Image 1: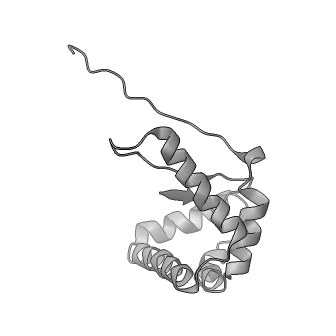
Image 2 (image 1 turned 120 degrees about the horizontal axis):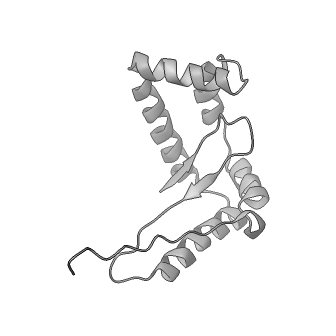
Length: 129
């Protein structure tokens, strides 16, 4: 999975996460994630895939608009970091306008080893075992 907060006042984190199946190691998972990032840096995203991602993102945002709580939370998040609440209204239009070239440029600029932190969470043994 991935996560990112576009409304942070300071530099934010873009997080890639995953959990390997029993048939794969953490190292294999990390290599696969790095391969996907490399592909974003070297190859333009497929138009159909980019459109699918945009639709998913818009759908989740529109779904949140059904809740007065989430509307207030989004407006409050913007205002508390010094951004105007009106950015909330233009967010979906900005998502629609994202191009494959922009995705590639951002991947080349920000998804680099100098900005990388890898964390591995190891399960703790259950008590009594």
